Image (cartoon, rainbow, N blue to C red):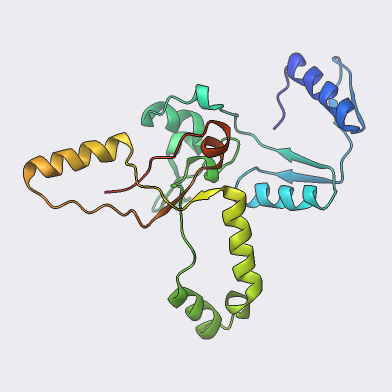
Amino acid sequence: MLDNSHEFLEKICNFSDQKQHNLTYNSATDLAIECDAVVVGSGAGGGVAAAVLAKAGYKVVVLEKGQYFARQDLSLLESPSLREMYENGGLTATSDGRVSIVAGATLGGGTAVNWSASFHTPPHVLREWSEEHELSLFASDEYAQAMETVWKRLSVQPNCNKENFQNSVLREGCTKLGYEVCASYSLIQSSMSFAKSDQIPHKCVHV
């Protein structure tokens, strides 16, 4: 993500010197960075591509048009979050207007705004893909190992049993009305940023 403020660019230059990147900056001209690869977009596709390239030893620049929001910058309210973190404020649609499209427009793209439940591809789906559609990859050890790598990278939490606020309210309301409540505790949560940086469990169990 590149910010055109002088303060930000100067910080980038200082960081680059420490990391031995070949970068020059003149406040009167553009920013110039030498790299091996440029990845456009920091979402599920771009983020993974950049990580794989960087791990292989390449110098990678990721370009992201959206803003970066640190945890303290998040309002955690639906309306402002839609305006700030979604493409067109969450009002994107296909050209004919028949299908609504919800797309993240922030650092991390869709991975920053989408539901964070994580689960292995169900066996019956793997069989369908590998047998009916003849996609042998999905029956291979390579795919299984890739899935485990993703889980490790995301720091998936296997024992999530706490509800977030809105689901707690929903549970309380249903209980008072006499409705039976069943929570999907079997869904496992991925919350790398919260789990690693603040040691706060991610609460997103759905009722």
